[in-house]
Structure formats: structure tokens, C-alpha cells
Length: 286
Length: 191
Image (tube, rainbow over all chains, first blue to last red; front, side, top):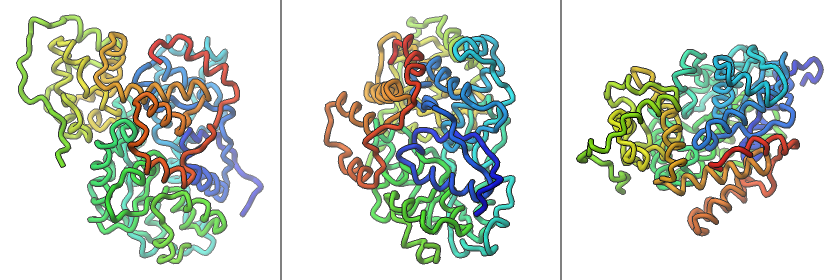
């Protein structure tokens, strides 16, 4: 793997990837390194406010996101791993662009000018611009035979104010099928996973998750691929069906497809509640 | 299994209780003009959580339009909404319903009427964790939430499974300049 000449990207992992979804974080950093990018963690970042800040205190939500924006190096795109963090940061950034009072408050609080040109990107947007297959050592279609369903959760739905931003619909199918895998048609690709209600109202979330998992099985998928650590956790934790289905992080499946990191895999997959190893062994990926 | 909460299907509304300033107040706080609503019910039909709500989103909007403040603020629907934006993307008039719910929840909180104390306790546990560490710490959030609820045994198996897979870290990931984060919380009476 080339270690020199890596291009730096500013990177906001978010709380889930920093802790509970460490496998998502390490597979993402690993993948980007292989593609020639060095993910530089935003120095001393804080939580974006998650669902809770904007739920009960809009100003706090804005300030928490604002601190992160104030930390972003002005000349690098800011790559965000979690769709929910992305939404919070983008929304705050757009609010700052449009609202002078908010801008003044930001500049007073953080003692620096607001940077309207800061690019905030989901890692999808990056991967979409790259010919991934050319990074595969032997150009093999390693995922041949894998049937998957893409799960976007709520990341395809945005508040009206962000409606004209780029949409990711079909991106996972497009990228993963480059490596020979087959996306299955199903109805649940953009059904919400239940997010925080998994704690406060598990009896509401369990049937929703079961419906999603059943949908994947009816579509004859071998696994579900998610792009969000929160969705990943809810789909694993709240499924009460006897027969479960492996849930893969998008970053993991692309790393597998490129034939990367055999020594790393073990650490990633041992953190899954539904063991994906039998499936990966059957495909000779593990 | 019956998943439906009692959705209020018929209800006699007492229009003598109308607060004529409520619609304007919600518009001012949320920045959303809900008088654009046609009541096509696209939001309610798309909402993945509607079965857990007393009023579906379009009915909350109608109640705000009628100025029935008490019914709206006491509704569980405004707390059950997680802000997944499924409703707003389906709304033909692009009404930002999650933003409206944020404002309604905050008004309810200021007036001390909270129909879903568990959900509020969860949000508070998250924010307390952010205030302490700058980042959210799942294990601490779960413990605080359970302490508040006096419920230690539900979800035990899930917690243990996550723990075994190292998905509930003992120690939080922390922001170094914690003073800077804590300052943001100084003015916040809701936390």
C-alpha cells in the first residue's frame, strides 16, 4: 500500500464511530488510506448534539455544531462518517450562511470568521468520484454471488432546507455492484431504524426492525449493507427474530471487495452481534 | 401483537379554548409556515412511528392551526417524532414538520407539560453526558436513564450482549477543552 503522497482530508468521526462502532471507523480509515487519502481527525471535536440537542434546545444544538465548524481547517473538505452528524453540521452551516444574527453569534463565541466555503461531505460523495475497481489489486470481482440490500435509513430524507443538496439514492447499489454483487429490490431501503427510541421505546422499535429484516429475507438478500453506525446497531440489537441476517458497514464491504486488510477483518467482524463470518467464508472473502 | 397506541380517532374539540396567537408563535419559533398545510395526510401515511403517536403529524398541525394549545402540548406525538424527515420529504408543500415538533416540544418543556417523561429523560441523559465529556458516552447514558426510570432489568440481555462485543465502552471518548463545551450549557435551563 502506498503510504506517501496521501492527500489530507479533515475528518469528523462522531461519537458512535469513536466508541461503539469502532469497526466502522477503522475500516473507513483503512479504506481511505488505500485510496490515497489520509483522514485527519478534527482536532478536539465534540458531539454534534445528536437527536437530543435539537429536540429540546435549538440554541444548544446550533452551538454544539458551531464549535465543530469553528475547528475545521478552512482549506480542507470536512468528511463526515455518520449521516446524522452530517445533517446536524450541514444544517448549522447553512443556517450560518443565511442568517446574520447567527453568524454574529458564531463569530462572537468562537472568535473567528465564519467560513461559508467549507465543504462538508459524506464519504459516499467521495467514493462516488473514484473508480474503485481500479484500486483492486487484481481487478477481481470479489463480491460475485453476493446478494445484498442497501439500507439508507433516513439519510435519503432531508429537511426541506437541504432538499436541493446532492442525493445519494442508488449510490450504494452502484458502487457495490461494481464488484460483482447483486442488489436486490426491496421496500425498506429508506425506512427509519428507530434511532433513539430504541432506548426509550424499544417496544416500538422492535417490530419496525423485524419488518425491515423480514423484508431483506423476502428479497432473498444474504446481508444488509448500511452507511450509518446507528442503523447498524439498531438492526442488530433490536431484531427479535430467530433467523437473523448479517448487517455490514458499507466501509467494510468495500474493503472486502478490494481485497484489503485480511489481518484487520478479524477485529471488525468480532464486534458484530450477528456474525457475518459464515457468509463471508462461503464467498471466500474471509 | 397490537402495535397501535390509542390514536384519537374522534374527539370533540372545544373551540372556546382557542389561543389565536398560537399559530404565529409556532411560526416565529420554528420558522415554518404551517398554514400551508393542505391536510393531504402524506406525512401521517409515511411516518414510520405513527402507530406510537396519539395524534398523527397532520392532526398536530390542524390543532396548531386551530390554536388548541393544550391538546398540542400534551400530545405524545411531538415527543415520539425522531426527526427522520420522512414526512417533510413527502409533504407537497415542503413543510418542515420535524422543525415544528422541535419547537412544540420546547414550548411544552418551558410550560412544564411533558407527556413522555421517559423520552425527555433520555434526551437529558444524552445532554448531561455531552456536558461532562464533550461527547456522548452510551454506557453512562443508559445507566443514567435507567436510574431515573427505576428500571434496571428490562433490556439487560441486550446490554450484556453489547458489552460482550465491546459495543458499550467503559470509558468515554472525551473532548480535551471541556470548559469550552460546558460554557455552552450555562444558559440552558432545559438540561
